Image (cartoon, rainbow, N blue to C red; front, side, top):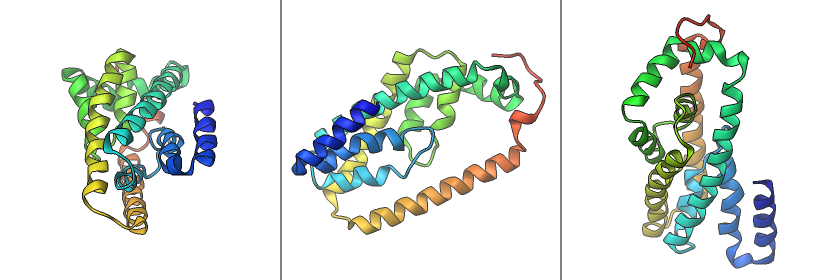
Length: 199
């Protein structure tokens, strides 16, 4: 992943006509990691500058790389003894039961819809032992549809970059606010004792 980022950055310096598209690769890594950045605006921005299919292809391939890394990292973290309380908590167990009713389409839906956070689904997929290849197929379908829609907006409407940045920052602010409220309402579930069977 680091090597791909370096190659993309070097390529962007060497080929100015492709620089913005090549910058999308490391930005995709950051925007789809466990420490997300406002990412959707970048895809909209590129929509008016490159062929839609090319934007979607680059974004999907980069997303598959970072999602494989996400799953590997989460698998290691959630296997540690220190996460036992989180894995055993009733909220986690209830979420897992609901997730197992339609795992594939749940993943696709959270990949497509911007207002539904996808990162909790990564945790559930790991805890449920969901196969990586199925997870990646859901990413291709879900993120692919999302990227087509976002880049399509950029193709259809020429939006000034400063408006895209402003909207992205506002959306990020709402996301942080919602996450803080959720953590406050749950009262820190990882600190509570295990009350259900360990996954």
